[in-house]
Length: 141
Length: 115
Image (cartoon, rainbow over all chains, first blue to last red; front, side, top):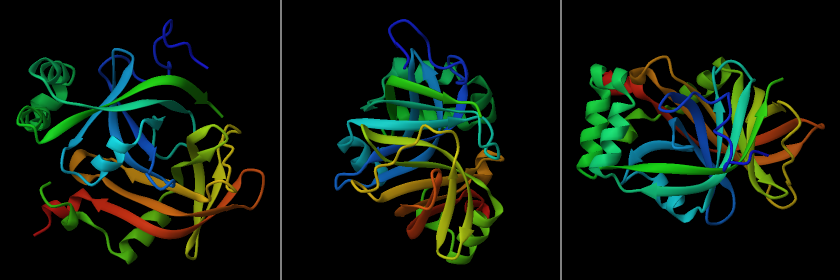
């Protein structure tokens, strides 16, 4: 168990601002789990990603208070991987947040993807999702 | 991608995709709430047989038999392909899970570029 007040995220998770592959799982209102693959980034000790405000996943994420993210480096390698559990929140984009998001993704901006996502964030079509961790485990073998 | 319905794979495409991969992320109800991990798998008819990696997963299937499995590939942004399986799980061994495939959500971003 990681004490988040004293440690940064797992060494398996790329550093601040770097993308990592993962799947975000939540429990649905009637109980069974559901999930979605994402590119997640670590910012200020939390995991962030973006999605469309109108997407089908949004009601389920808004309903969930907790989420589990399974993070991995290579899709064909069973291990290593990290599991991060914590509170999941929908965060409304602000100029400051979007600017920071863009600034942390220079490569994507150059390719035009960061710009498009940023535009959709600023126009309110997309929102941020933030997973605030309180538990982390790593599986190496 | 404006219309997600255009990205959906048909049943044959889903089966081919799942058969082409071997590693999944999986989540279910643990003793203390939702928990997740990784597994290798094979498709066995209308089910998936998962071998859980490590020993951290302790699904409480008596409490919640449904699990969620995600398999996706990301060669590039325009070629993202994935299948999310919802199904009922039973233990077949200490780390072996059989999941009856009951509902599938799929997406193939390459379809957005198709005429």
